[in-house]
Image 1: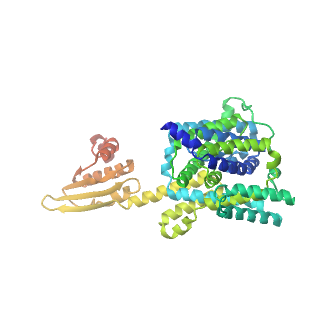
Image 2: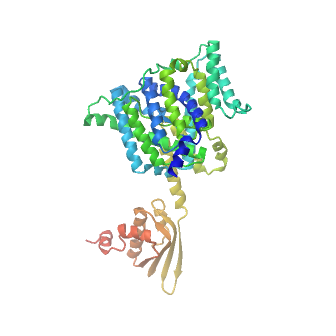
Image 3: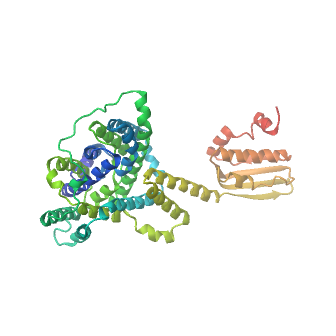
Length: 497
């Protein structure tokens, strides 16, 4: 069974994976160079990283068909480190980032994705689509009309080529777009920006490098404040992308294995002179839309990338940026969840606020981690508020026995604890109070404290109090943290010695 699964991952879609991997490799080149420039390092640092990370995650990652490489989200976090301490400390920080991600995998932190709601994922996807589009704008400002014509022509090829009989469905349209526009630019000798204008491409294969930094506490103090955020952002983007690719391909993936795979890939990148990276939603979408499904597509993307920049650099340099801009605009259009705009009318207000807040924070700060954190926190607050409304207390009075019975229904926790306390009438003169908790559940010490307060207040008023119907889980937490049934603790609360 395992052998069949491995065979399917690698050889289940050979033609589709080869073509898709080639398209992705071409799209990775300008991205890797651009991210290197953002981070303030030589283009080869991003290109070597993209090769290494793609190949390693293809071999051991948890999500077949997902593309991992150097990314803009990670590059933004490296700027200050490179500026203040140089490339060698960046390589050391990359190694430490990988170590943290492997630890996260073994701690099974990949399962934390279950805390991220659909509205946060939608917000994350929409924000990324906007950022991908915004990243193309510098290539479309202060340029000649040829660039606009090439970009429009490229988009026309991308969207119309699939309708061509016989070959339309068999060759990825982004690959046709890049090939046709490159040939056209060379033939017409157009004076427009090309990949070669982005920076010098490497002319040698990467070699093993141990970072030239002292192995002491001082180095750790320098790289730790960068490695931790890099590890968090890298895992967040990778796990979110894995979830999106899961949806696009109707398959599941091993998120904890992906954490370990990303960690090992980053260690490999650091040892080959590359920067830290993670999964790329744009390239992953290109891969899936171009027919890539298996590990072979990711492997091909990494290997072809290196072959092209080292051995075919004279050809690659001539690819017009307009062709790659057209591909990335297609990615941003395909990534954006257009249905979420229509859903704003039908979804609850809280869901819309979470989605729009995630988009706003990510686009405003260019920090994916902050956007997701804002969305998760808002989601938790809205959920807590909603659940607290389902808690209520009913009461009845038995005159012969002078007993007031309270039946508590729902979830008692920090947000509903005050509502629970305010549901009791402490001034009513009765001999006995029965608190029935058969249909209630106590979750935390705030709820236990509220129960203590109610019981002690009734006893202060001279009533006998009986608590009945506690379920096993609530009994455990109340026995551990409650004081109302512990005489020595009650003495302290009531003012005894």
